[in-house]
Image (cartoon, rainbow, N blue to C red; front, side, top):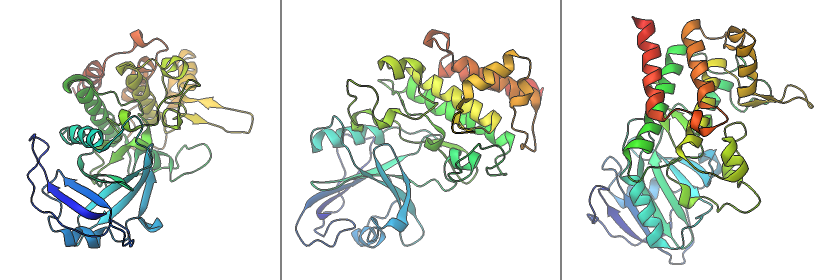
Length: 348
């Protein structure tokens, strides 16, 4: 980043509170060519001195800092002196966004969104050669790796983190549901996620859910006439109406959330390939066993605090959420009510 125009900004205010303007070289770059860049921070917990940013991001683009690859770019972990860490997403696409003003408006809107179960956006960087999104770093990785083991290629039963016992999984389900309900019902206009999958549910130090990659529709590759881009090809999670005709609604997110519930209950991946010629789709697998009276055969038997009745009720909710017809699926507000009644009913 050179010629950084550095701002510390409260996303709740329409105008930025400019605290510092500095001239320097690009983030993670040794190029001496002057590139005008702008760094805007939404969080007061982040370092306010430019020197901290320069040292903290010096190795930003090094392979050793990569912690994931998202739908729109590579994600790096950056740690500052004093131990503060953030996640930095280097954008590979700007989708339908045409210029800096549009980019800043879109990211500024995301900076206003605050919920305990959503990964908080903490700022952004813009230059003609690099666009970065800054967000809170969530330490316990994503739900997929915790459930199924790190990139384990085959069937996933009992391969995950043994600390992810049922009471934690239930809290993850509730937390994710609350995050989605907030996006659907409390944001104006409502925000559709459209990319719910277990790799986008991050877990904090207490294994509480933090949903990431929300509100990014304008930053995503534009959908073409031949189907879905790589963003919408999360195998096993995509609602049929989205896959077949690109019909977008909040019920697409409800479908994907239903798959997450089935993942939590069974410990299985959304799609598994036991052999080269065999494909097992989780929704279909669970539905068939339930209709055959074998619901308990679906449950993840590695769970050390397994409460069978509770798991089966959550499984049935997952199947309702993954109904073929969107009109048969509940809203996320209704999902929360059902989850709370399941837990309260068992506790009483």
